[in-house]
Length: 162
Image (cartoon, rainbow, N blue to C red; front, side, top):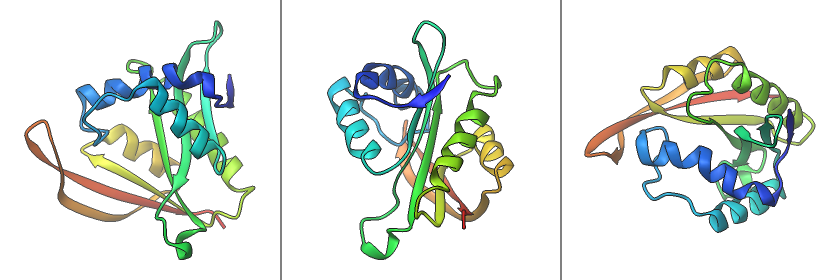
């Protein structure tokens, strides 16, 4: 079931996201997210942008997607960055596709014109998902991040909504 996030989802968001922080290059954060931090992010982001969770029967959250501010300067106010995370092991079940479909539908109801997705590379699954929805690669930065004792590339994909 897809639904809007609520502040009570903080611990579940941490459970999904911290896997990526602690075990992968997909997130450039390096310290596990605490529940209070997740609740604050939920509050801040969902006040302005769509923030959705995929909740299984029984209440387990196995994925989430949201839009957030692309850049702080006012001329960027019609742009947003999108992020999507699935619980480890839940890839390939259509959850990402459902989350992205609903997220884009919600964003089309807003004044957002352009979406950006930053993807740590390599990440074939994320690239494929975004390109399936019409995102086009707009930039590739070499050695932009440093995690797990190695330099990491980042690609940026964009989608013009309107």
